Image (cartoon, rainbow, N blue to C red; front, side, top):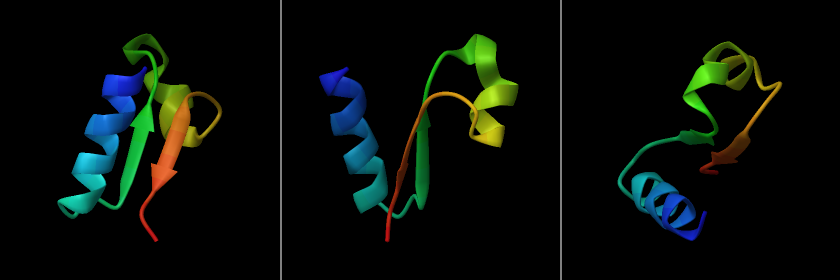
Length: 42
C-alpha cells in the first residue's frame, strides 16, 4: 500500500486533482465513491 500512496502523492504534486485507489473489478463503485480510497488535492 505504501508504494500506491507514494505514487498518488507524486501524481497530485504533478497536477492531478484526484486519485482513487482500489480494485479494478470495482470500477463502477470506485467512480461513484462507494469503494476504495480517494485522495484529493486541495
